[in-house]
Length: 483
Picture (cartoon, rainbow, N blue to C red):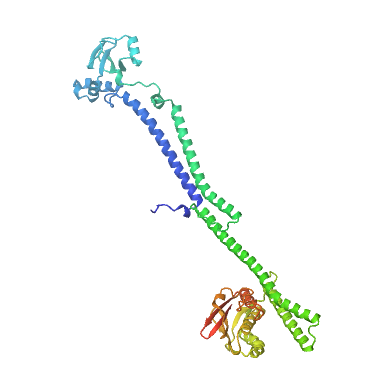
């Protein structure tokens, strides 16, 4: 169901707190209204019991004096047409007209007591309107000529409530004012507590998730990810945490892989060095013990020792080169240079070795100038290693193709051959150190470091080295160099 306001994940924390505060004020006003209604109902309940029969009935004598004076001046005595007097009579009250001696000379309505004359004390006592009096009194002087001097209004006391205190609210409340004040304070405190707990819980929940995630990260659980449903700031923190966790996890995995590669590298290097060194020791021991008596045998033994020492030296040199590229002190000289003539020079340098192995060579380089960003030393080593790899593992008569292909954003150099090819199961690891096409790891073939050095150098220049096959060409190495 769609909500008419933004979801919490899209709102700022400041916006959420403002909305919460407005909601708090709304409930606070609602509480005030409820307390007011309770008090009002309490007052109304009290007033209902004090209402007269006719709520519009006038209980002041001077109101009736005006009507009586108008009546006498007009000479009419039709009381039925007098609305106020009729309302008084319907409510059970009456009017007495007194002379100067306070004697009743006339009355209007149904007189319910036996007074025919009042003393000053009796009249003053009645006008006090005490609660125990049977009738309510109100008096007003008359200004007409004749014996009539006063108009005395009388209404049954149970129909009229006399309030001396002007503060009707305090007079009419059934409970003390402090009672309502305590109720109001209690409700406000309860609202503040609920509001504070609610806001604190909303903020504490995402913070708890963040704290738990950080704790797990500290303990080494780098696969920890968090999903926070809260305001935008918390969501951004959660996304940043997840990104940081991804980086740390990938870095940790790379570090672990590097450590494993390092261990494997040491084991492989030890294995590959052990074979030629053992051969050198064997032939040297034979010479020391005098088993090479004739010159031909001695020369053959010395040739074995020399070849094996060259193999060891080449392996150590390749290892140093592989480690040198990864060294933080290694400085590259990458800049945009013409690459067509550069490829031709490399192939010219290696032509003698290719011809000696009886390989067919096809160099395809466009005549126009082609520029790319590369380090001459690194790229030269890449191409030479790929050619050396082809010469080491393929028989005579193999066709070797080296082609330079300019594209829009990069330059491609393909080194392909039609030899025996690389087993498919080795493709995933062929660029790892000490991986060779001959799985038996015999002394023949290369050192197993050439392709690893080639890929590392290519990546250092911002390029890519891949392996594929195409038609007759069983092995196609593709070097991509940015322009």
